[in-house]
Length: 286
Image (tube, rainbow, N blue to C red; front, side):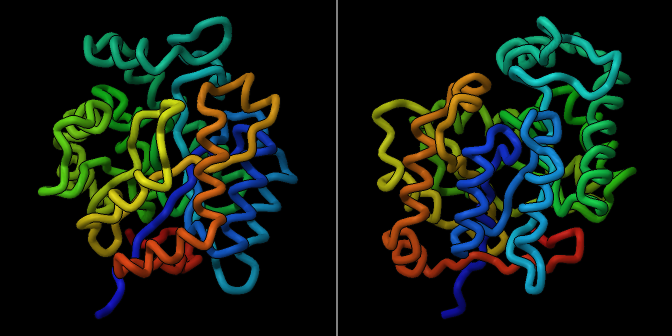
């Protein structure tokens, strides 16, 4: 039987040195094949971007995407972006509330997203292979329109992350995933109308609590995952900068430990899954 080829994407490259180092280590070991870069984060200097790019010297090993950031303790890259809180983006809950009430400024959203995409082009010298959003902001009303329009105009060969789970394996008890399912409605069709490709399925959302057993959770993400499907993850080493910027800390080290273990490739093999090979052409196929 031919294995299903999937994308295992580590989000948040650039958020802290510890997260960056952990992601690169997993790529080097062949345990990740994609990472999503936060150009608005403070730790994507020339060295960090260069070290990531070096992993694709010779045979490409990792698809590199843009992680559009509009929430959290990060500074907007465009001068007039609003809403802000003390010079930073507002929280995910606040952005969700304003987006649902359609109280965001479409022009300022477009400018910020376009600035982040242009910054990616300047840093890496090429368009991103794919584009997604920190805390799934690409799915929100108003944000979605600006996000898809900017990608279609600036990086039309990049695919965009849709977050719909595999039909038939959705748990109604997973509140977080259910919210994402609802926000995702219509995203794929809207992207298709603009000529943008999307991943056929998505997994990786779970409750980020101290009780989370990632080794037990991860195999569930593989159930029914089709060829080209994407699983989101957040491995990393905890450092002072991560603690300052993001509440997701210790679970990152649990994810790293799992992906770095022998258990991980054994689980992939048992489910008939392998990681897709990046093409290295600046726009990976989902």
